Image (cartoon, rainbow, N blue to C red; front, side, top):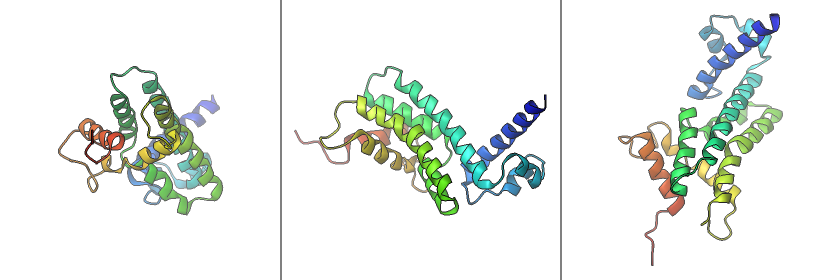
Length: 195
């Protein structure tokens, strides 16, 4: 029975930490704030997670796993057009992350030990970039010389306008409309098509 209490407590901490880390980022979230949200002491939190780096890494691994499962479900679903499927993939990421996931992970690197940087890099590559690369690999029409992995990395770094208001694409539109607009720009570019 003790194991269940421990696992329940760990999950409660992960849930509170997930909400705060995803909303505020690594540097703007303190373990004191996470403990306060749970009405527990910092030493009690450290009983379950030895430090903030460990906790942040566990949060990103857990969220990444959930995102990966949802992205793979979208990849298995038939769509009318590749653009529709990429919009659905985009919405998975946007709905799971209140802020830009690429910036969230990579902005934490300045404060993380190299081992955690590598681990988070692997999570990002496997759980986010990997399924998007799979989409580009199965979708005909990439320009010659553009690798699916390069396309997926470009795509991930291009999502910033869907998060927050500062870089928002047409903030007056729904997230679905903004995602469709961004996907159109990513897939078809800015230049007028010449016949």
